[in-house]
Image (tube, rainbow, N blue to C red):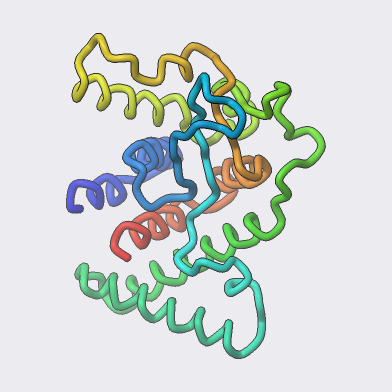
Length: 212
């Protein structure tokens, strides 16, 4: 955990943020989306890489967006818990409260992406009959997410474990359309948020995701 936290604490600018995202997502740690490999229904001749929106502490995005008393109480409780976690890391009360507020604010933003993201909207559909994407198409859809570095880290770890002759993500880097995006617009909006949200907010959010 200390090694991972050190990566986040080293973030100073947008380039550092993208590098940290590549590291965290490449390890499939708690981050903005989840990855799994599976056989798609009706296609038993090849595996697909599924990418699913994530990034929230509370399972239901509506709990971040509702304005009723119960939802607001849950949000306040979560903010308080985030604050306590940062206090345990040695943050001052002021810095801990700021980090907690940043983390909850970004989770609120991600919750809106979850709630507003349709499975398919015009301009975001895969160009392939399979509904899958190739790596270059995912990069075009969400250019501020470090896809190639992320998959490069996964491939390097695979080769280290399995040997240099192992077939590790060859189909991904070979341009095959094997990537499945659940709610493509979510990934586009997260990519935009990498640029639009302050680096400090992302840094505090990522640290909170690790220590929660």
